[in-house]
Length: 425
RNA sequence: GGAGAAGUGGCAGAGCGGUCGAAUGCGGCGGUCUUGAAAACCGUUGAAGGGCAACCUUCCGGGGGUUCGAAUCCCUCCUUCUCCGCCA
Image (cartoon, rainbow, N blue to C red; front, side, top):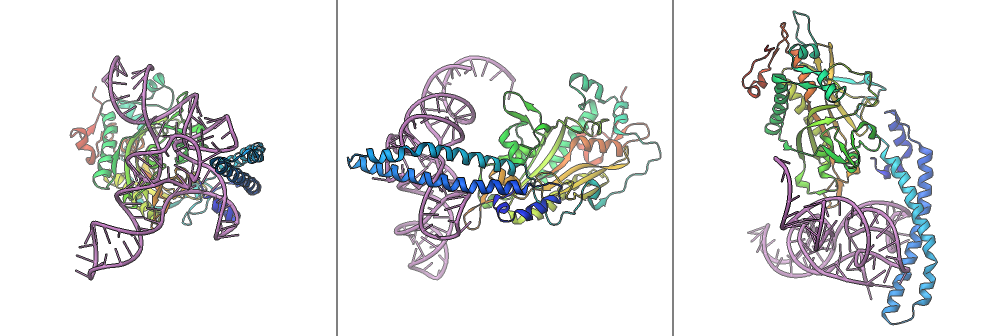
């Protein structure tokens, strides 16, 4: 959510910056509502002041044992006018709030202008894609060949876009999550957290999923709860409504969780394999920081995610999302894309974003600033990494001619020393 | 699931129809004292919004109601605690 003061003071400027991310702000409507709000608010407050004043006089009169009937008559006809004014004010403020909740974040100055994914700016490439001397398979052929990855059974027990893993491959999936958590907690200073996978609407609103992306979420009918699309939601919302001590910052949390996404509107995309699933695991890093620090922290956070890929020796590149491709709540986002031999392309495996005060304002997450006044914190998060996609990357990059998969050295301790995942039967 | 108790400012904790945005303590900030610090003492200290200066409005778990007037009364929901039941 943007600061309404900013909209009041520089509406045109905000509209211009939002246009860069392909959002059209209805300037005229906002202006009209603000005008209306001002009038109704002034009138309402005048009526309230009159009521308060007269009521106080009634109290004083009664305390002295005087007759207050005249005063009471004076104020009794205020009631209806006041009620109408208050209701009107509430209505306008709700409309303004709705508009505000639907406005995306302003892109940071360092974000390149662009209209689509094609305009994202490559920052660096790390590692060289391996040269294969045999025809490469994608993870689906590899997994099914090993009889350890099964989409048919998954769709029987649930529906499309789910998967079943078995044996060493399931363990490799678990090993990846463990490895990531261990690196982030022991080397990058994050506190491991375990959080609810079902959250309420306030939390969804806090991080920006609601109201705009309600259709993308799985809802538990009747309970007012929603399956989390990322651990970002429960973890970031831990500080919702809090006023933190300045010395508590930065807060660094890491959580491993399943993520649930309806993938509405991506019906034709990535239908094969486990690239795009309704359920996937992710290790998520979240930082709650002082506003002055957030852009330095974004670089650090990105480095923490990259460290995982480096330790697994997977080739990747980093891109800065352009203004047209950046997410709703983010001011700046780096994507990390891992090389997938099966697709001969780089695919997103992590997204690291600075939300500045956008989420903090929705959540009212603050800290006591230098002058003793509460100030909004900045929030950031990054995948570190998407576990399912990392598994895909490991399978495809570490495949052998016989269809087996070499276990990356960094993971062998988590696999009981196993060096190769091969078909057993 | 059943019975009871409670939810007040950063924290603890009074208030239970009128002058209460709210006593008191702790914490925070400023000052006196001190070479410095601690202690002691004095002062100050909630948030949001409107004019943006005086001032005004709103907020005592959320929502609704009664009243000229509600932190205080009523309804409802949520949360926490205690006891019983059930369960991994």
